[in-house]
Length: 286
Image (tube, rainbow, N blue to C red; front, side, top):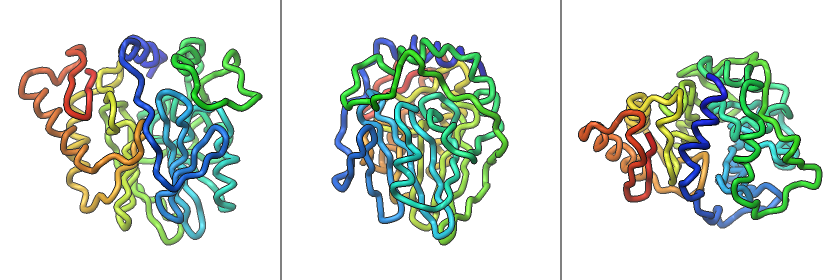
């Protein structure tokens, strides 16, 4: 991967309205920049509702270990928020390596990523930090950033990926098991994280209520469609946990996405550069 993906994202979304500000779950706590959304007593969304993309990271607490899926924008210290919730050791699973999901990785000793995302993380110095910073503040923050945040010094995360995860890997955190599901399409090494017992599915950027991006430089629309169909085969989905936008999305949004991609395939539009396609609750940019 190269920084061209970031450049393409600017061009694609430059004229598309930001994700609407949606209410978080009713039982939430505000922690300055972050909002903590309680999904259950040992599962939390950590939202960044003050920035227009409305990022979500997710914390799963087991008996022996805590897993954080993604680390957000890097505007504020997400580790402090996690440590206010749990005292357990923390490992980070990277859903994919785009800058808005890896902003806090440097705060953690252990993180994993898919092999197909490795170059993106390790060679992030190739990305245009200035353009990414401009994208970050494309719309004014609606919550105050920490006093020490300086947009002029903002840089995307770069680090060596020492731990790889792959399709079918299971993280046993003590009384809970989280499974890696490789779901390429948005990016080559994008993964969803599935907790079979509780039916929780972190969908990250594969599906959320907003503009789905399948036309970036390293996106693959046909892989995207296959990944959605694969999720439909999971034995139980009680709650999907998206990477952006409203947190309380309905499970039938997956059906709408599958139908939308099927429609694009039938009409010959399931290909890059076919443009922005509007559906009921979704838009798809290819």
